[in-house]
Amino acid sequence: MRKLLGVLLLTAMLLLSGCLDVSDGQNTQKFNGLDYNPPITAPDFTLTNQYNTTTSVSEHAGKVVIVAFTYTHCPDVCLAVEANLYSVMTELGPDYGADVEIISITIDPMRDTPEHLLNWTTTHNYTWPHVTSEDHMVMVDLWNDWGIAVNNEHINSNHSDHGENETSEEEHHEEDEHEDEGQEGEAAEIYEVGHSTVTFIIDQDGMKRIAWVGSDWSVHGFLEDIRTLMGEDGHSTHGH
Image 1 (cartoon, rainbow, N blue to C red):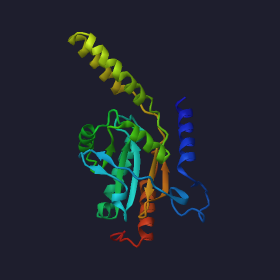
Image 2: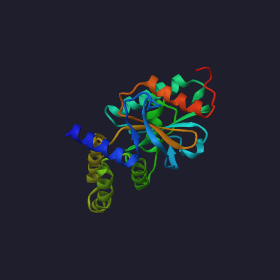
Image 3: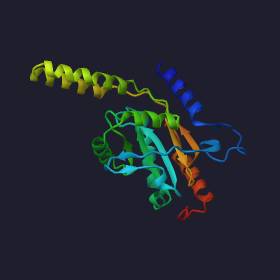
Image 4: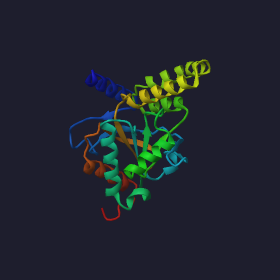
């Protein structure tokens, strides 16, 4: 079932994200990741990061921007992507911040609040923006815009239950309220979010150019793609 869900999510991503060049021919593929042929405009957004300031793609115009979709309670794949991104940031050295930016977008805004993201990123020493929104429908629209398939039933179910919980709180004793809240908190900690795992590389003109699918990707190959894009725009690679 999990494998079938992964196939369905990846299929949805491919249909929504534009035309990807999956040719194996070395002469037709410019990048190590999947090419967008032709490139398409990356949807912009303005979301809140872990530092309670805003982050968008457009504010980094003129730079290569890496956009990943992850969540902090993920038991495996997202953690691997985040670790890869940390390696990319480290290997870029002075290029990071000057010519390249990374943005991680949550697919679990119910739990990934700015406060939680700050604690989590600080623990892992991940300094790039991890963004979210308290308006969960903004996130749903954004996932759709980027072609990311997300099982967001937890968002809808929590919203629909919210009104009922408020009513029951008025009718129950304070002791029962605390018990209910504890049960809800426990349930919120154990659910997983099914989603397509894609990391995008956006060029200096804000165009989707490359997609890396899954988490088992080569940091070396990823860095080569970044530097190829930097070279297109005449950016310095600081000796690389």
